Length: 196
Image (cartoon, rainbow, N blue to C red; front, side, top):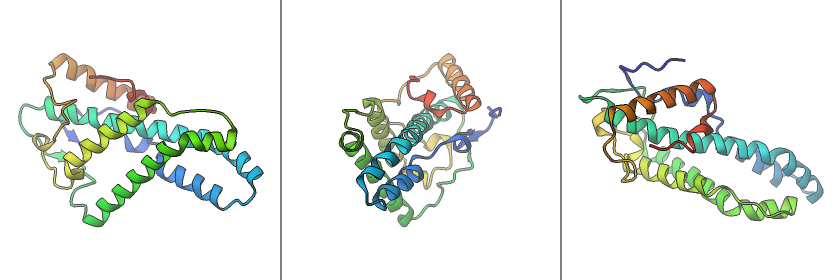
């Protein structure tokens, strides 16, 4: 898929290739909760935990990709452009509360990950620290933009201090090309270690 450079797309093509963490983790969690035998839980954990971790990796990449795409949109166009396809436009308070609940679920997963691995597999393991950093960056970014509920123009996008800086034309071109390559690869986790 080729991204149209002349249009300010809210989503350049991330969502169709995103392996969403929340539904995968929720189904996994419900499965464990509904299974009474500890021995069966351990087997289920061994089979399903890698699927959950892969979905988290994809979602972390998505968060980072969204921030970097906003960097591109904010800095590429000389004149404010209408953002096309903003699926968050006019979301209500109930939907915002749902987003907060999802964030809490993610935070709880981060906090309980090591103890759950110890409990079910008997080894010590931790999630990469960068996952938590990107989550915090994404949370700050979306809250700064009021979850994009009223964002209509590229000039209205707000970037966090970490990303609100001057970018050269070459950097923006490289960023666009990286976004295009990652979308074509269908692996959003490649955004995790991409820095601009």
